[in-house]
Length: 94
Image (cartoon, rainbow, N blue to C red):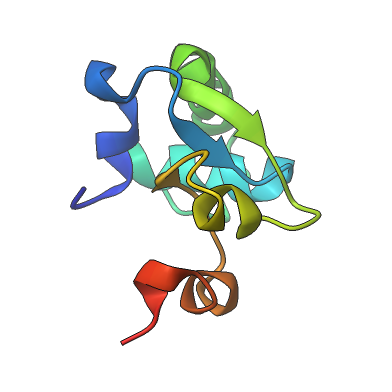
């Protein structure tokens, strides 16, 4: 992966872990569409919603309670994760 847009690739079907946080997910979609993550434009927000709907088949689970665990257990290896949590995964350590 090299950017947010890669999460929509069909090869990741059923593999993504996203945080259970509407703001984080909308910001990701807005950025993918070239908009500000803090957009208040109704058309841009609707476009982000439509973009997220197309991501649905790639999502395996939503987790904000302990988001690093699906990576630690090998349940998933791709998705949205906060940097402090990513560092705590085996792949995040030097």
